[in-house]
Length: 333
Ligand code: NAI
Image (cartoon, rainbow, N blue to C red; front, top):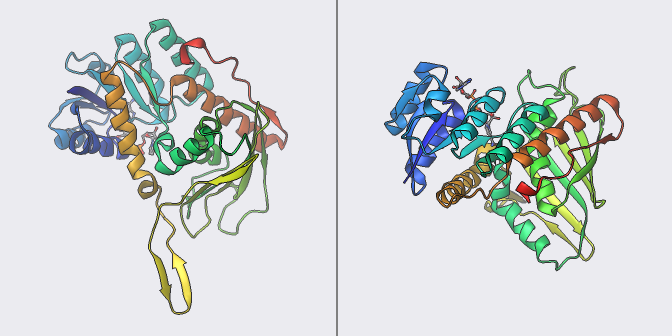
């Protein structure tokens, strides 16, 4: 039984505690920590766990075999570095860290430790739809991928959501998932701004078209439209040399009523990806038990940060911006 300590007991922290303890196999949450003691106590009641307010005390607790880090992004680097120092596996919710430099520090520390310890919570790689697309592409049946047309639409966002957040909080999932899907690396980024919807405000350009080009020359367009009003609508279509592979949307009943044929569109990101969180964390538990990391690595976390930075620069400059990550270290190949 893998004994886990959870750092950060907010919304997703509590969800993961319930998931780990009640749904998944071979794992139990034994300790939780939060800088906010009452929050930690509430979360501890979900798993009958011990409470700390100091993440380092949790990481170095002899009863903790592995760590799940669900604090806010700015706090991740400290926890992940401490876990590496303690030689313990750590599942870190995205982002790995809020700057590319901090992500690189984690990469360097993990390589120096000589052990694969870090997995980043990019759960789309565990979504059934994306896996089906990846299997189709990897079969080679359709030839090489040439173009990807994707959308990331949300019904609406809060008034504190601003233009760069379309990259850091929204497109970040496509950034990780799409290069994995086509097994390629990014080369450059560009952002085109159409006229904005009347439902946005002066600090948020909405929608945006984000363009990524890979080293093999694949052109990717991602429409990010976070006040689209009608639903949480994630699409991904891959145009290949000998066919087109489109991700299926989760099935809902097809209704015939009053002269119309209709089907539902998901409205919440939680519902759309709920199953992938279960698959993701079960896979992490299983691989940690074997001393491995299967999912997105610290290097993937670093690549996502560098790519996001290039997209934000492109939002501001209107130019094509280079994405420079350097060579992927042998350790991650
Ligand atoms: P939240 O704000 O609800 O919870 C964060 C918790 O961490 C709070 O209880 C806060 O008191 C605590 N905290 C703050 N600083 C801390 C520190 N230094 N050490 C320990 N605890 C600390 O945030 P939420 O929504 O739960 O998000 C947490 C992380 O999960 C974020 O990085 C977010 O991006 C990620 N996330 C990932 C999702 C995904 O789709 N993979 C979905 C939702 C969140």
